[in-house]
Length: 346
Image 1 (spheres, rainbow, N blue to C red):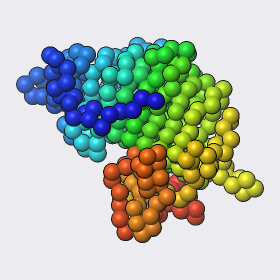
Image 2 (spheres, rainbow, N blue to C red; image 1 turned 135 degrees about the vertical axis):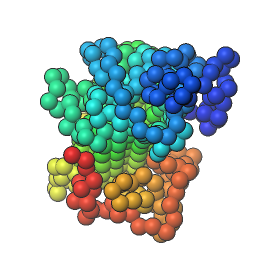
Image 3 (cartoon, rainbow, N blue to C red; image 1 turned 30 degrees about the vertical axis):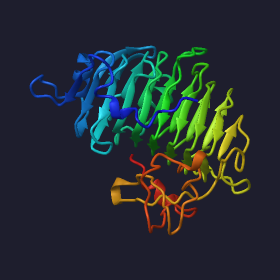
């Protein structure tokens, strides 16, 4: 398993000899959009994005045909937001928020939010598979970026990984990522390479279909919360992903089966509750703020969330291991599915 080092981002701006940092916006260079800076960046450079909403649409050639995106990354650059909540990539008018093509793990996307409040149904009417044709982040053509501390909310599929069958290079890393309230799957892995896709310390919650769907791919899922999704929490087809130290809880909300209870695991996966550190318990998400929804942090007291310090090595399960809440009661409970559905953006 590949781990993103805690010191990775600390040296990004000075790590590579000759690398430069291009800021967005930059009045002197006439840069107002992220893609303008990406066009100027060379491998090893950093595009540092200041707080704001970025929604200018560009068109690119892909293995899926000509597709629109707000940002396309096709070289090993670093795309770094100044603030996770303050930098917003809005792909309401495009198929993808960020499109990654043929990059290695040295291509890094970090510290920003991707939203598409008006595109819940985008992709359903397109030719082909709507799960592939609209997404917050789409990785194609052996793309293996490292995606850390990113939030993807209220779009079509949250993250799509469709790379090369059998390629050892097709293995993105997702760490500290939130995927919430997508109209298709949270994370859709389709025909990935031989090396495993890493999903670690992520929160995949309240997506309309499956939380994580691994179709003919290879994945290692650890220390992650996969809860309150419309169908299965984790579903595998022609694949058997590794699942360890995860909280997979109260999924199958769209078609609940009173006879069997929530269907947290599906396809080739048996119920893994109680195996390899996996749990299934109310996560006590505690930070609901009106119409802005959840940030999906968990309580460390009153009551203590079972996710707190329950991960491998005593980390907290989910995307916000260092962002606990105190003295709170989660509004996400067994009887609150109607309230959760009200959060959907249509």
